Image (tube, rainbow, N blue to C red; front, side, top):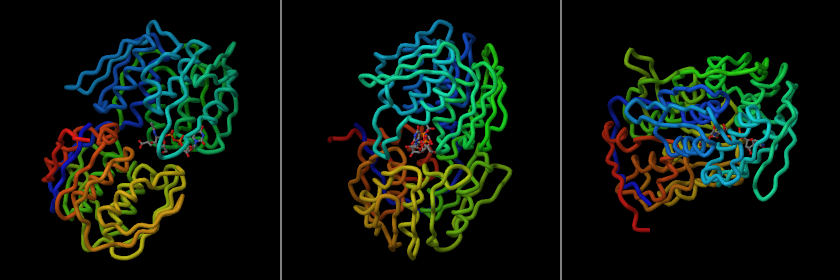
Length: 421
Ligand code: EPZ
């Protein structure tokens, strides 16, 4: 186990290149199962979740090899097995269930372990199964393994009770090879859905409406190998924007897509953090004292739940009262207790957090409870007086690559050490 040791850092300055998006890479890697031909995916971030997905593809019989220098992952699913009952990887990551749709589409019969538990919420897969069932699959779950099988997949009209990102992706990954037309209503519209659809179209799929709440797929008989570059990670970008804000710094983010960051740019603007498009990238800097504000997490294009924790860190230092309403997950305030150890004044109930701004945070021993909570603690540690030690930072490595190097290059006092716990 490792820990971060972080000391107070004034005003981050400089350039940071944002890596490829974890939440686009994972479904796109799963999509490689849909063809026997080789696929080459670039701008793939070296994250533990990406390596878990790559190992899961290998367990399914794929060739999968990652070149860290070029951040390219080459995948070929020529001969595959769709029985992943014995998989070591599947339980480690929720997104592993995204292989269910493509394996069902390719083999019409698959065994995939139920996704592992998660501290931010129960995260059921009922909408995934509802969609795959509508396409003609029968499913049963025994001993933690979901069995899916179908004589043939046929296009269908599917209404999602909630615009689930994963369910939209799994249904897309099956419908592309189903016979006939599929319409997904109340679909998720996140940029990562569009990136997956772009890759599937390069493979020969017929998809339209991605990025809206209604996606239409005309099934095709086969898909082919393709190359694709992953979109930038809007969550990493937002985290660095908040790092500039919380330290009173002025940084340039390279390789971002501004249209993916609209809610973050808007809310930062409301609390005196300016953003400016420049020839070198997106400039982010604080102008005056942080102002309190209210945030409600919503499906895209609303404010993203994955930046709720990092934004809470910022609001602990905004003079006045801020209210955060978390509408997506039922237990996504685990970071509040850790922030209180650093002097933050936060009261929470299941879906609502009330934050009273304080003049300063103080360094403390804290623990990352989950990926985005860990990022929030890093941000608070940069602003806190003195030294902060953050344990269980393996959670952070799931979604942020070279974090300490990128922060150090901006002037942060951060280092990684073996944890004695
Ligand atoms: C994706 O998770 C992301 N993960 C999450 O990012 C992100 O927080 C989430 O979307 C919401 O934007 C990846 O893309 C790998 P959902 P996913 O299905 O697909 C309920 C991060 O930090 N639901 O949109 O699992 C569910 O319980 C991670 O990078 C059902 O009820 O999210 C949750 O309350 C965390 N039934 C809500 O929908 C279902 O069948 C949103 O879940 C599916 C979901």
